[in-house]
Length: 196
Image 1 (cartoon, rainbow, N blue to C red):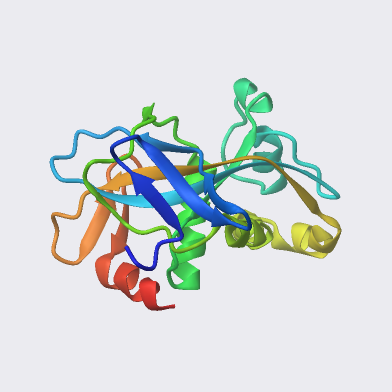
Image 2 (cartoon, rainbow, N blue to C red):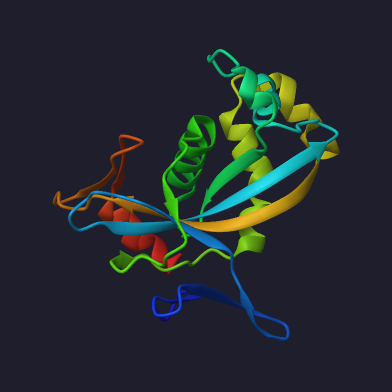
């Protein structure tokens, strides 16, 4: 698509973005699906640690944001990964989607192939996704008065970034649904986001 900041090639299964010196290859993965006619939305998976507000694992994130879930032992070794929409959409929806995916951390079945089906264009560059991390963190926390004053001292360190294509069922008239997340998204809001 003309408004996409990432170019994909389904022949050689690669993805590319513009850089100062030409094209730079983008690491990506696609979530496998059994949907008959999926529509793929792109997300940036940003693997990070932080100082100031120290978070070195997914368990640290769950404690810092005071989520009502029992911390699992293996979360202590799991790198914190934020899921950030790689498409522009209304801010409240952007933060809701990011929160749902980041908190739930589903272990999807992944492949290294570009989807052969319909893909929504990547309209949010990785650098802009990185800039949204503190806001995404603030949105997920249950104890805002504890975390908010400490956000200015927080420094986020990016370890790795991957583009992920997540399948949605868009067989309904107005909504598309991500079956693994049981999460829905209004189609008109998604299309409107391309003009933001």
